[in-house]
Length: 387
Image (tube, rainbow, N blue to C red):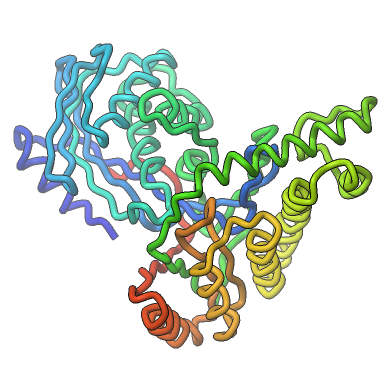
């Protein structure tokens, strides 16, 4: 957990000895709802107790002076610089400044020092935490008329698109801004409507096992799967011209089965994953409302199986970790993220936790020659002012 005094001491050291305001924004996990966003489906993220923390103070100039505590690196740029810095981490801050200005916020120069404990490359969205932290802070410091929280999430997404070159969806920034302790959020990726769902699994821990692998075929395979979904949508649209079919979200089981002979077996299998995943997300929603974590876990395993066998975005290492979870009596386990590497997310009874983690580390190391990283996370609040 990041300490306020740690960030403040670096801010004082690297600037003029004066203090500012401290803001924080978290990373996220996604309990269920994978490869659904681009099909207009549902996701179920939650903010976590790993965050980006920044101290910020207006400096009375048009210069933004940034110090990355983790990188031990300093970058400066003008608020109205048309190009911005080249340093990769500074591009995020520059992008947020520019997007906030587009939203009518009169951003002036400021000093900032920041650090984070969201693990990099583990699928917990450290970049969204950075964007959301600065969007929230600049809104608080410079906006005469505060912009809405959803607009802050859009600022983060636009930063990725326009200044970093990542064409991401909205889930990561949404979770980082809207997170609520002891709650997950079911976000409708088509309408952007959302609902908080209680998630306070007393007697359980949420554990991520990082496989430490990322297979290179991920980007081309992702495009192939999107194309499969589009192919099925086109076939259903042709068969049901009177219906408004725009995304796979609009296709039900009866429609899908009616075009099974008109699309490839692979395309059908991909679409079947999505329609089934929609059912599983809704099943988890009801289970959470009822406090039925056994049912939540059952559906997590079902999602892993479908991601592995129908959508085929798993890999040997992730399937191995999932099998270890089953063997240790873990309540629920699945791939978290796009697949082909990364983490599994596990819902583990507290009394099984230590044995499960030890077994997973040992068996994975024996088979693959590396120890998976272990992250215990707690569902927490979204972007906020610390002091």
